[in-house]
Length: 228
Image: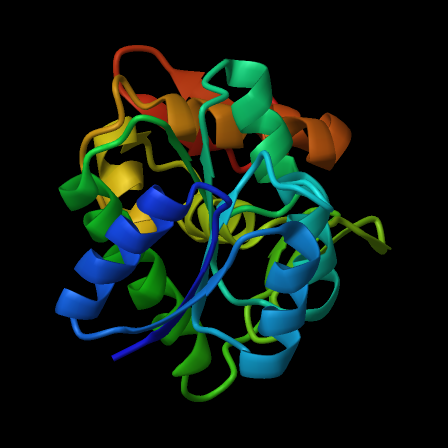
């Protein structure tokens, strides 16, 4: 059983989500505006937050940023804004996943389970693994930090997991389908848009080193051992 916080101002939708999540065995709390959501995050330290974008008092992007300043729990953004730029803004604010409305309850339940599994794997990690090095790139899996030329690179949880997988398997090509299942925990994403968006952001954040994440046409992506 997980503690889940729903921050959603549409009362009927929030109640529907609560009902289904409680049927799955979770303990669910609700907030209907941004400030109340932040207060409940501080008070209850939920295992996962379902966060609407358009909230009274403080919008979902601002709430997500403030959560990320203090906590690592997964955040799934729910929003009627379905354009790619909106997805990018949500993920860059620190969301681990982005679900456009309207959505199917079963799909959302699958995404919740996947996010909770990822969170449990991070929390339950055993002996600290050694840092991974690729040139000036240093990834510390235990501290979940990334530096390039000694300068820290701020990544979301999902961006970190994706980069670590690619770098640990440098030279190997991964399909979008594999990455969706391994990193996001599900297999369908309308053509792998989540993967493409995450890779685009990783490339930008890594600067020149991001050019080493290359597209393998018809397959997916790989991290090359040295610049082409």
